[in-house]
Image (cartoon, rainbow, N blue to C red; front, side):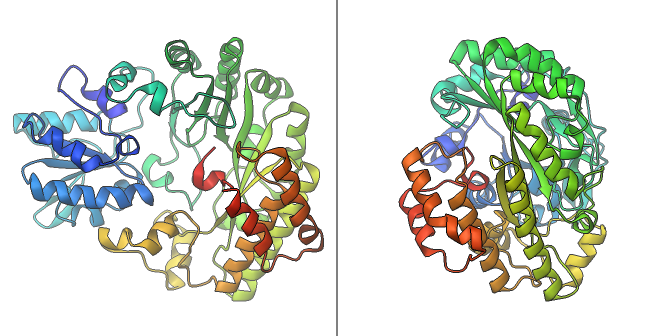
Length: 478
């Protein structure tokens, strides 16, 4: 939508949403067959999105060799060599494309140099050329997103307002880009380099209100990397949105929001915020240091803040990363055992805390201490796009099937089995299909295991979860 907005009024454009098409390739070809379109862009993240983008891009390039293909998004920004060496991607937009994309199209249309366009990566004489990065720009001056034109391609009411835990018609929205922190495990860091820019609270409210009034949205998922950076902006938006009676969710840091005044947290809840995602990562301060979490977050603070949010009726959603690299297998196992015990402590002080478990996936910032530890362990990244989309790597990118040398199958089994038992005792509130009877039944089955710390072979819980199609938010969303 941002890219479409950047060329609106300058070039004709269409959007093909793979989520809305039974055959995305046929839809794309129907446009290219008209001869009216010379350029095609893919926004690509690792995992399932990449797995779809690779065969589609390859097929399009074979059938329409003169079409110039431009990839943007997290994956090509961090892996430009694999992308450009594929032979079917011509350019990569490195990070935000609001300025770079229209400038590149202008240069290609006018046959003028693109060597000085910031945020562009390309092949030249067998080498990868990375143009300089553009300073992160203010968001308010950007053109408005073309919701009305999108609605002519795919009905917004039908495709983009879904039933979730938050509401009957939940919209997705990005109100800011970047994050001011430098966690070494985060793919955002090399793209935004500890920078953050946000739309004003007034402009966010204006967009949300427009979609609410025109299509009936009643809830919002803010997919910002860090929505709550500014206390002032957060409170201002909360007060603006309060009369609209919309529920909403966003992502934050614990140490940032723990500095919010009680009155601010009260305003956030009164403004409709029901649940907030926090990257807790670990209750071990040494692991937080290893992950270069930055800020002031500690294990004690993680527990204290979960308890603090109880009085505001805001559900904390904590993610934890288990299985970080260590010199010995015993140390890795000790870390996993520590986190399991710590998570149970969090649940003890605030049982409503949602827990999301990830097995550590090595995507650390290049050159960081953690990056060196990962390479020293013998871990190797794929070199080609075909390697990246193998089934093992797709699951790996979902942090569910690690290929990490320091994790044994027994360690992975313990993490997964604990997760199964934990989700049995505390089924996620976001699974709206799980009724009270099913919740009580699965809690009864899993409760004794959780109490006496027996997690092996939880087949009876898995059977119920499979039977009732239990949804984990880290995989299926809300």
